[in-house]
Figure 1: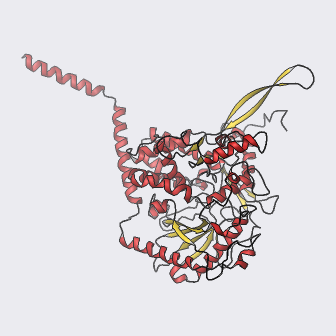
Figure 2: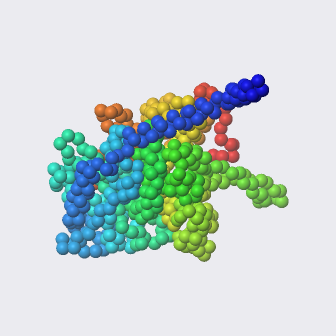
Figure 3: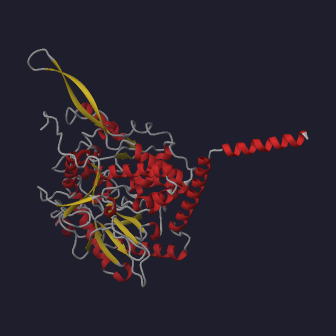
Amino acid sequence: NLRFTMVSHSVVEDASLLEAIDTASTQDLHRSNLLRLQVTELLAECHLDLENRKWTVETQEYFHLISKTISQVEVKETGIRELADKPLSVDLGPSKGLCLSVQPTGCTRTRLGWTKKSGNAQVLPTFDYTVEIPSSVFSTKDYLHYRYFDKRNAIMNAIAKALSKDLKKVGLVEFVRIHGSNRPPILRLTPPRRKAPQFQVYLHVGMDDIDWIPKLRLVPNRSNIKEDGAKSQFYNHCLLFDVRRKFEDSHLEQLMEHKSCNDTLILLQVWALQRGLWRNHDGWDKNSVALLIVYLLRTNKMNPRMTPIQQFAVVLHTWATTDWLGRKEEVNHKVRAAQGQAIQTQINEKRTRTVLVLPFDRNGENASAPSTELSKLYEKQTRDSPMTPDDPRTLHEAYSSTNHYLLGPVFVDPSMTYNYLGGVSPNFMKLLVWHSRKSLDDLNKSRSAFEVVFMQRARFWQQWDLYFRFPAVTSKANDDWEFSVRPLLERLERGLGDRIYAMRVLSNGNGEFTEDAGDSDQFPQLDVHVGIQERKGLMLSPTGTDHIIIGVSINPETSQRMVDRGPPSDHP
């Protein structure tokens, strides 16, 4: 029967076609669908229930309570004079007061990345609020020589004592230091509760504007303290950090309309927490990660219609492939010898990093960078009266040159005033890049990608082969711990070379945690009744100790090699 024969032949062809299908692609499809389901369950477990009316009422009531208390704070001029070089430039009598206002800031204001304890390494959900000090409080030169921070700390001290008077309503009030500098602390408030607290508040204190500071005083080649170099640049960053909500909040609002981006931020938080890369004193914070997502959206490198795991991979790819710290480029210069006409070639190293500039909108990155007011002022000043002959011609070049901007990675706001990553150390950035590359490989190759990427814990004490402990020693009494450690790490990396894969200094966010015991972020706290310490005794690590702990990952192929090479003979 011809018809039967044709049908049989068709069935045979279909069967052979099915056998020819690449089974690997079928397995990939199954793996991607399974990963998507696992990520959905993880997000459902971590999301904070914003519809819970009781939860919302408690947080709102607590916010109104601390706002009312802070609005009634009185700071006497004599209290300020004890720390500041000059008295305040305004009358602070009881009748006028400071007119302090409290505002939610960053991801707290936009409700981005809010998670339960299960998505926060068993740490209480944390909300950030900022007490804004009127700029009229500061005199025209208070940005110099830590005078702003003296006044800021005196006002914070008064706020802390006012809040601690009503412990039954306000709860526990402590000073904590969460950044590389020990000078500007913040307040941690834990509301009282019969059983267990449901959340905690980080209360920052900053200025309401920076118009009172001359714009060019904040560019990389300006020093506002007696020290220069990296310390001076970090000091300028700390000044801008206290007004960062002016550079962050309006841009973060874009993510409020994209649920997938909020889910991506939570995935990145879980991923970083498992590796001890979250809440570090020298690392990316939640706001800067959210702003990186905004950058990727505005430069069309990420689509809001992507799934959270796809956006997660885009962020990891950006971390892994961007030249954050600068690559070495050999530049040959022909130099005539002082005696004779012989020409010799001198090889210099020029290192430039990639500078990310957050666009105002989706028009692209380069459209906003050259036209900012600050960049025009910098170019005019450099052209007319440069500070040194080697000053970069443009502000973008000043940020990209590792010889001029010494802090680390650069990701600036559209005005190019504030570096969102000014507090991120090169040591942290190298580790973040390494973990990003490894996780990308796991997502592409591993059959158990979800477990490897999101569930395996590899914090500081499980991640390294060797651990070293050094006493924290500094040559100057007022040196910060952070800038005594960075040169030490740089010298160790140079000396060990390829005998190691990586090294990392112990930071916050690396405490062990279980479901019963909360994660210790290892932020040292100080009782408010003791008061803020003076500028002496700053050589304390982020975990509150007087020593340095460094973890090292050994390269087994080269670690046993004897010293068989050294620096060039013409280098000291």
